[in-house]
Image (cartoon, rainbow, N blue to C red; front, side, top):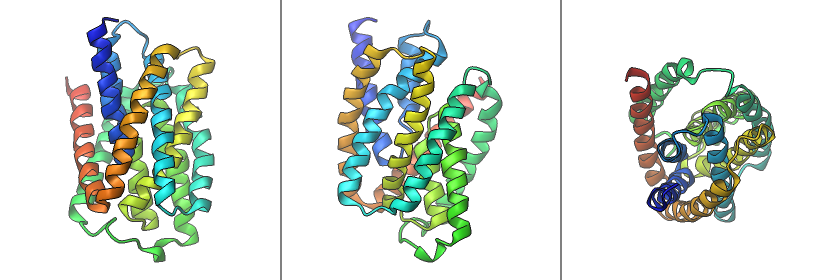
Length: 255
């Protein structure tokens, strides 16, 4: 890899770490950058290398949030445990299924998320503990712990966005606490997928560790900015990332 290409890739990793720390979706930046920088590399190896870089940034952001934000440990840790299983299953199927089949479905879901955030401006601004009924907690565990984590293993970009929406819409968290909770779950989705990719030999370890250093830097900057600016800032970035994901997937599907 040429030095200038590597430099741009490392900058993309910093940006991806920042986006991941605020709302998730850093893979929207880093995975396409890897595809451009190493076009001859098998997709499974790019996915595995991306996971290696992402997991360090996510852990770094999760620690930063945990120091400042009180998290519902029972719900989050239960979801995280399921996420290890769901993401591992998704990664195992990443080489067997074509993501082109799933992308149109995901685009519809993303469009629904965008409308949901726009049409319900009060959602995620103030926590609503009354929504945390037993049935809603079970629904959140199934949706975030298995459904979203499976998506993370098989495709990846936007996982944090889906986790935040699950925690705000189903459990009534505000966006800042949902983002903090999502980071812990996202660590497990990354680890579950990473183990499967590592067993299959689908990781460029040297490049992945270089990306990890940069994602940690970006994650620290993003987490601190989100904590300082609060829920409104997280909501705005969330909407931008959702629209960017829609545009990216639309380009993949229709071109």
